Length: 207
Image (cartoon, rainbow, N blue to C red):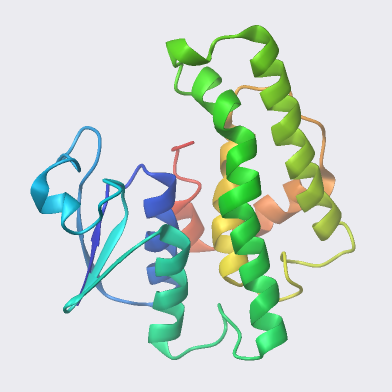
């Protein structure tokens, strides 16, 4: 059985938990990270030198980076619903996953640290305003992708792109910031909320 190391409140751990649940995979979870077992110990650093969660253990294999773990689990399952076998369809899913990990994640860092984490180092009013605008601009890009009537990010089928972007959407809607009204994003969020695995690991009270 696979083992997932990481605390359940982490957005990146929740990606992996949601994916495993969607795939019906059995797993064991160990709580690592702030408030639980520390990740800066030699034991954990031997698994992930970045000292970050999640980490996946599958037999002798050790894997880190949440989006990579999600892709691995989908491929491991032998099913192609979440990660298509067709090269073009798969590339579209991975494109949006990579965008989430690089562009979208970077857009919310200052605003999230300021408003949700209440970090003393992130309380500059001008930088906060710029950060909120940056975050909203990127969410408007997701609105554009969804505004043509598609049910999910890459079309009418739920994929791994929706796992990572669904959690990002939840974070945006949960943050105490000024947001534009993005109707397609809101409809998308409610559609994801019909999935029990999202309610368990995504829309579960954690920002």
